[in-house]
Amino acid sequence: MGVGGEEPRVVAKLRERFPDALQEVRAVRDDLTIVLSPAAIREACCFLRDDPELRYEFLSDLTRVDRLRLPEATPRFEVVYHLTSLRNSSRLRLKVRVPDGEAVDSVTAVWEGANWLEREVYDLMGIPFRDHPDLRRLVLPDDFEGHALRKDFPVTTEPRWWEEKGER
Amino acid sequence: MTETRTMVLNMGPQHPSTHGVLRLVLELDGEVVVRCVPHIGYLHTGMEKIMEAKRYQQAITVTDRMDYLAPMSNNLAFVLSVERLLGVEATDRAQVIRVMMAELTRIKSHLVWLATHALDIGAMSVFLYCFRERERILDLYEMVSGQRMMSSYIRVGGLMADLPEGFERAVRDFLDEFPKRVDEYEDLLTQNKLWLQRTVGVGVLKREEAIALGVSGPALRATGVPWDIRKVWPYSGYDRFHFEISLGNNGDVYDRYRCRIFEMRQSAAIVRQCLDRMPKGPVNIADPKIVPPPKPLVRQSMEALIHHFLLYSQGFTVPPGEAYVPIESPKGEIGFYVVSDGSNTPYRVRVRPPSLLNLQALPRMVGGRMVADVVAVIGSIDIVLGEIDR
Image (cartoon, rainbow over all chains, first blue to last red; front, side, top):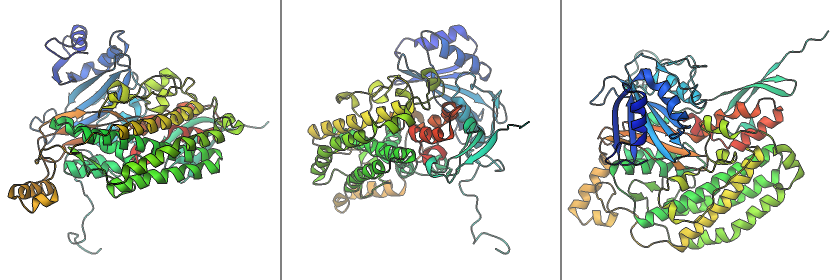
């Protein structure tokens, strides 16, 4: 999929199918990033997977970035999808930006493999996915408080002995 | 009238065949698995969070500890992402050495897989044989990096150091012997009736299922998908080497076994090609802002001293941006999604853990099979809990 003067095929097709959903398109070297509006994400994923020309049938990764300390911090969270087309050997990065507390549509129905990835994001970043079949914490215990990968979660939480008040 | 009920069996996290601290809750109907729910997280140490608190060069040491059976593959994946952000490319010699070490790592990782997998199914001697060969590779690791496991040998901009004297001889000695050793493993297993009964047709994963589940690596190729990132998006100059990718057909435990055995032989061939065409030259790029100057120079040149001081007290900064460079690790597609805010620590590091996604396919593979097959299937997907839990 060429990234040059002309718009890549996948962008054109997405723009045609979802005229209002494309918020931003960026191509740095061979890295293509498309930012979509949250409402369109599941349908767009379905479209990208099933389109006979594009065939992004492999979800490489799904993760989230907390943009709290970045210059451009609103909306706070960015869900990042790395899609791979095994047929065309091409890669695509999709993004959805949401404020704190707002749920994103789950793509588990599109790629079964998204199940644990979304659970991990829910666990460590603390934002639910709508219509997820089994939304539980993945790696941390169920009674853990807080979400460890948020930027306002401290790296160390155990009080150090010289800072501790009262008896040990 | 007798009532039949299913029984819940807890397997792990301290079960020897779960390869670490994996816990499975199995619902059994007699000896048949009705439902399998994996529970993970016992080894979670927040590695992504730790990496976000480290400088780039320091964060490499954390990658070693994820998939501790293939540290150099992890080093390489992380370093490639950072180098993409920096816009630098390693020297020819460094690239060939990286490929060589990555392939030795593949052999080493597959040896542990074969050893433990065979041990689970009851072939004790294969375990001892494989560890004997693995020891040789650990010795090679020690020669180049001073460490047998947590090597951190591959660094941003190049390598920790050039190859030591006598290294080529040592690798050639190993390569001369290794194919015969693989024949030996195959003599013990490939046609072994017991082995075939335990593996053929067990834990079948269909092609479509594997793709939908995000399964990668040998487990995906065993289902008949010719997908190897070394071929598809060659990194570190893999396109200059001749090798074939493994391919299975049925997606069962036996095919995964055949794929990995084949890969070990191919990896040995790649290592030999590396030695034969090892280019001369420096192993680090000539950018003093990224790679520390040689120690003798620090004592002579003021500028080198300043660079040395800055690199070891502050590290280097990386321009803002994001990068994801996937590579083919022994387990499958591994890639580090690195987001930089322009400072000297990564803003966000996310690992795409192949073992996690491969493990997710486990319930699909064991449903309706016997409990004993669960052990065979876990062994065949080659998981490392350090990487799953991170």
